[in-house]
Length: 192
Image 1: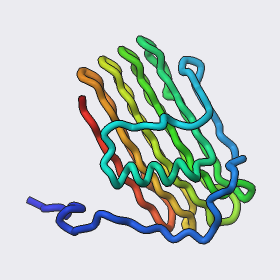
Image 2 (image 1 turned 90 degrees about the vertical axis):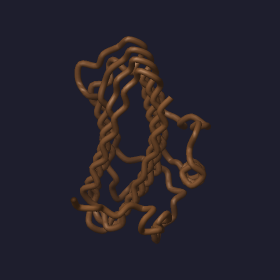
Image 3 (image 1 turned 45 degrees about the horizontal axis):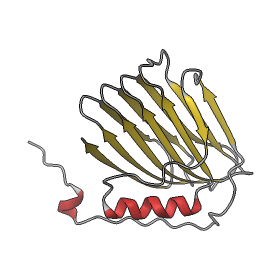
Image 4 (image 1 turned 120 degrees about the vertical axis):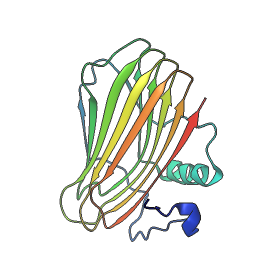
């Protein structure tokens, strides 16, 4: 048997990122949407409350909300089964090197689907992405959120996610951290 160290065993419950740029920049970069015809899309802030978050994650969420420069809510309507994954692709570039996003994905009762979010960088480094995603899954709904980060070797990435799954629902989250000089990620799951 191979025992893997955990955060509790290592007494690591904090992470620190070193940022050398202002976070108060607007995100005017490219966001490419694919296969969104069956979902409701609302650009703007994510929900103001996420029930049941641990104190440290709520503190992080509040900090990100204060600096957020892009927000998006995607709703898979009741009973809708997505035929293809919905794909959102963000590109951080020289004009918009900072993205601090809030993403809310809501799968209404009996819906099914997959959402894929990709973060890329183009141009010279450094780029900074900080994000908070909230996946809300109602009864009998099935949804997977896949987040893929392929930033450059000098880029900074901080990503947190919360999942709330109602009885008889299924919520999956896959995070692929494939780039970045400094990377911090975390998740919280609440089953109801």
